[in-house]
Image (cartoon, rainbow, N blue to C red):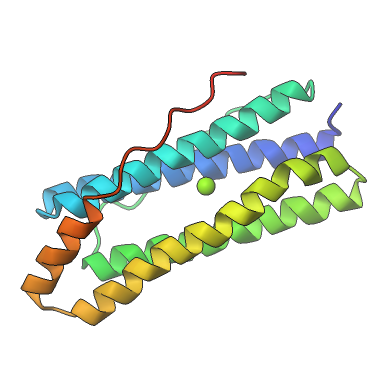
Length: 171
Ligand code: MG
């Protein structure tokens, strides 16, 4: 059974992951609106992956006999000055999520909750990939700078990202 402290913290993380999904959905709409369908596709997949992260946490809390409590999701930003500004915000956001996961891991150790610690290892590894993926695009956008032809090609590359696997329906 989960301690109240750990349950509260995991519920907080469910909200963080749902906000992430909301933020990337907003970025996807922004990119559709600014005629970058490849970036929009990439952000849609990113948003779906965040829903999978939230679902993983929900399943875990339920499996440990905890109570999932959904909180209000904050409204995300809707416009960005440039594709680079949006991806830099996404990178900053992923660094924030990594910090949240680190705090959860520290709490699990403090509470001697080794099951939660083991469960969260997946998120620790995932965050390395999340930061690297977004940073790769930030660096590519910096290289392209303001060249429309470069942005056009990069948009085509971003369109290649395929849909995330469906969330497990085990909760
Ligand atoms: Mg996530």
